[in-house]
Length: 411
Image 1 (cartoon, rainbow, N blue to C red):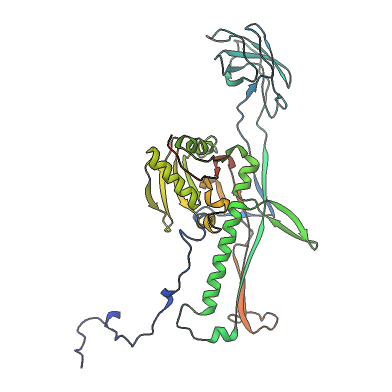
Image 2 (image 1 turned 90 degrees about the horizontal axis):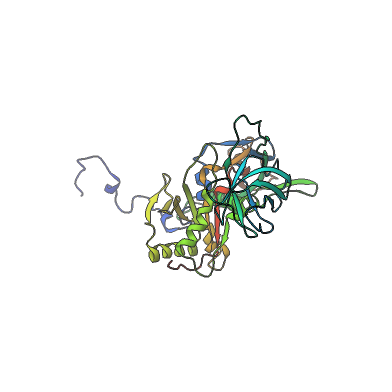
């Protein structure tokens, strides 16, 4: 007979065959780094509500005029420059008298005196310490300020255009169901079938929203006279509004090329945010290439970190900012031959959000459970998850995309 217990009874004090065995640990599902890290990040951001199936925001972009010569300037005395079209000299591309431009090739500074047309400007030459000289065709002139004389009249006014950036709400739905008989059967492996099936449904739902957030394309149409809409994800938001931020890597990529491609996402910021922090979502191939570039060039130090909800990432510091690099399971899901595997997407997380239409934030539509209505008399329990939402990217130009990262190189 065993000795009596003299302390608090603990689970370790159970006899081996008394407790019911748990085999749930023997079932493994493979979701490295979490199934939907971007969707998970959105849960930590301020919520946003869409009041219509078309949802968006108004934005202005600061204008920095530059002129490209359309024909050489033969000498230092010519004052009329023919340039590529300014697309409306006083509105979307404002060039007005009093502006100073710096000639990229000669460093000469010129002052605009008049703008006769969209393709001509009249200037004062050598308006600075550098003497006027001939300028070759296609040379760029960059705005470097304005200068007006004492007692001058008001300059010509201009303003930044307001642009509405819109997106459509998209209905995401995923269903689960088990027969009444299956629900009544006792199991010794894993969870009860209805619990397990519903959990899988939730994972599929998160996967679909995550996929849309990255790669969705905007569309509003109808099927059988009934409206259907899809939302624009990050890739196509960048493609539409900042296509210059998409770089296709060559056969090899060195540190300088990687840095130049990532630098693009630091060129603009919203008024209230000047952060130099970016998330870098990568496929397995891109992950290895960036690690290889770091080893070959010793240009940055990689350090391992984790978010507050457990997502692991490596961080590295490049020339103009810091990146938290996350290997995204979605990019690896289709294998090494897919274009996602060698893709890297630098994302400015504070400018991203998910906006749900009204109260349609992951609605649980269960049936035959806890007295809920019987669905078509079916001998089963089940339901579906429904989310109607759209994605907002308030500064697409603060993101960058690199395609075809296949090999690293020194340099």
